[in-house]
Image 1 (tube, one colour):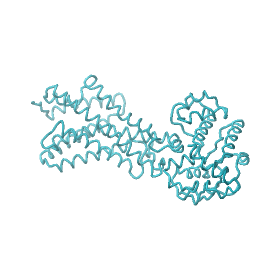
Image 2: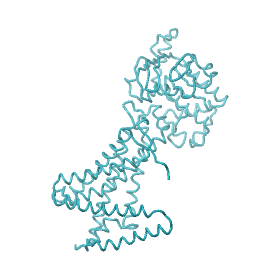
Image 3: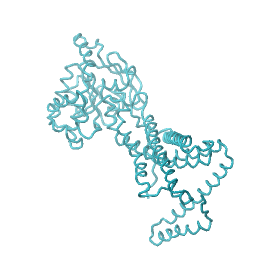
Length: 271
Length: 222
């Protein structure tokens, strides 16, 4: 493998495309150029920064530093899961649910991959653990936030249906069964789409990157297969963890529906 | 479910002359929450308590507290059994709340009735002027009044000793109202207890043995 290294000048040339987008936005009056510039600038700063941080962490090669980086990533992903839904669980419930579900799903899938399939020495080697946790987190975040948004939204919408079942003597778990199933299903759809489209509609990012970096395409495909299994598994785990953790917070010792623990997100003035 | 009600019925018929002494009664003691109460009352077998009062006075809140659907404190006894000693679903099957706007969770009406309830709804629907073919319709196809009566049948199918009915005939015409009241009277004669919220003073007088008024989250004599 001999990756072709990029120079800042190469990147500057590619950035012309973004400038072109900006010019289009101005001429067509799309009003997107400021957002576009900010997003591009953020992306560059974030990626260069994480590049430096990872270089540092790889150099230290201390399990504690690796763990710290992964925990920060989990916290950020957990926050993303928490803020997506329109509905909020009281006492920072969304954050607790989001962070624990993301952590459970990511650790389980990443540790499984590191100890069985990839097996670096040691298994927590930062060069493998951090990128793997990162890509799993991205998908876990998606699955988790879809599941949480779907569950909380449908609980508010279907309140009368849930309470009718409770009033007739159904257990809370039984009354919630339909909504829980729908929420997990919704959260898993992107993962299913991603797998069905892989290689046909899209050449997945990891595979593209590895081929560009000089790896044999078949070897790159094997890595991609492993990763898609991990990502889909992670999404599923996160979705299931999110809905059960959230459902537990929506009831109490008398199996009531505690809709009073939900508040709608305060929305700013609409544009 | 029928097995749950029969001891209560037997108890009552054993002492028909002293309904207040029987064990088969509903006793509500210092029932209160942040939002309403305190409430104290006792109901005897075969008795119907009618509650009227302005909207937002706390009528539904009270029924929901008795069914333990909303957080609350205080004690409620049925047949000298305190509800906290039972799992909440078991309590709610005995003391069943029927909302003013009942919810549905399956597509078709029939899917809401399983086991013995399937036979029950087929025999009871015609008594409330509901065509049995309605059972195969999607819930949204039924009128508000039809849904209301179907929901009542759903509740009655549990054969519970206590019914908490929130405006059971709210959206019904006069004829259907009479049919519903007949059915409820039959159940009362068999020994069940009903707490009924209604906006109609006439209905309160027709069906209720007692009549209380909810005002500002408190029950007062009507």
